[in-house]
Amino acid sequence: MAWIEILIEVAREHAENLSDALMEAGALSVSVEDADEGTDAEKPLFGEPGMEPEEAAWDRSRVVALIAADADAAAILAEASAAIALTTIPAYTTRHVEDQDWVRLTQSQFEPIHIGKNIWVVPSWHEIPDPAALVLELDPGLAFGTGSHPTTRLCMEWLEAHAPKELSVLDYGCGSGILAMVAKKLGAQAVVGVDIDPQAIESANFNAERNHCDITYTLPEQFSASHPVGTQFDVVVANILSSPLKVMAPMLSGRVAAGGFLILSGVLARQAEEVAAAYAPFITLTVWAEHEGWVALSGKKPS
Image (cartoon, rainbow, N blue to C red; front, side, top):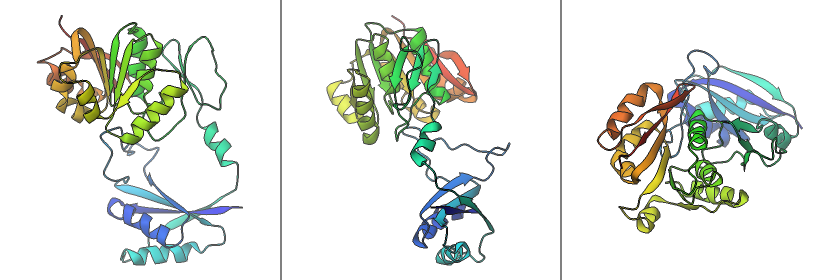
């Protein structure tokens, strides 16, 4: 069976409503892309834990609707446009989509990822490239963190370079749980992961069980109850984004034990100075490494 995709370029304010209207008019699925993807005008939308974008739309958005091969693309778009009171029907193009093994195609897009000196993140359907390496079996999922993003990679490389053997580790904003698992496999004694998203906690628990890692993953309110103020960790890592990191400076700094380390990422290079300034009253942070415009900040709390 084959399908047809309708590709429609619209302004940001129409992307979400048009998507909904297309589904009502008979589209099988709808997605929104950056119409400037691949150009200098491309604008990434970042949706990491705690900072999800309000809408998946760009100034110039491309709405892509999948319809049956025998469906009338013009009629479906006309109905959707009328439903949201567009004065004119947007210009569009179509392209044929041939049937194929979609599961195999999706899996082929995710290869094992080599990080640092000796870490491999391997999807479950792949063979392990190096059985002697530190291997994490992790499939792409709903929670952020597979090692493909520069911020995750930077934190993993820091942990590898400063193996927390026999130390306690807090992963705040844990997402998929990948950083907590790296810490545990590097010899950490007690590891706790915290995230505001219940789905992330569910995903992290699943991943930890699959990778034979004894880790406690919890929501913030549960964490506060089981680890009251004053409970500190030898290593605290937070891979979120700059705005929440600045807000959480007193709390995260307070969770670092004397002589312990704080590692922050989710920070663009141009934001490093202002994030470090927010933590300056508690811990002196410097840029440990940079990758693709993102940085990891780290510092040691005075003994």
